[in-house]
Image (tube, rainbow, N blue to C red):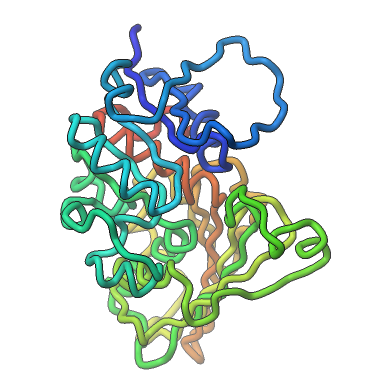
Length: 336
């Protein structure tokens, strides 16, 4: 069976390399490596049995090699520049940066501290969280892949807010921890071995750029949630502990019922029995989001734990989930 070709820009980075790994198992797609930084260092690897095609990073090269879509695992400024060119040549785009996740250029500039270079495309971009926007994603030409932290947070919070059981007059606390690969492959002092090993640190307090993705897609307002990100000394994985106050809930089974109604038919969300919670090891190298919780009826306190692999469900895996929807392939292809 012949396969369609999809380009991967940023294939040397952690998310891009993960996309190459996943697409190499895809029954309908052949990954093509698009070189946008010829001077970038490439780690030593065994010679693969079948070397992927490698081409230049331009819309013209994409057309010449019959690409139907590209995944952009690039910084936001690079994504903004490339997306306009690819779309102009009829090539679909899944962007893994934050370039098109927010609703206005002004909001982007506020949170990312840089000017938006393609504001005319913001309204067209679909936020690529399939569990919420599957019908909007199917067949579209531009999808903004969600951030890793918001993916776990929104999947954990939104069903509860939609059910009307969250007491939003109390602050919702989202305490999030991530492995170091979430910071990308480019070396910095903060992500060097001696800084990370045997350490545990908070960062971007009260100003993390993923925060607007949470309140824009969870049903909350900005002032109703407090999010803090932490760096932990592991290579990959995210665990978020979310503290909420509920109203009118009699038992943990009621909360489980809300989650089951939202996710029972979702292939990539796994629920735990009341009183049981997931850990990072349960989701590493998978496209799953695992959700568990503890509930205390007397005080209406609810603690939810959500885990994902930041490079898979938080990046490349979800991008391929979106790509499958855009191209009309089974959503789970290459991901289960």
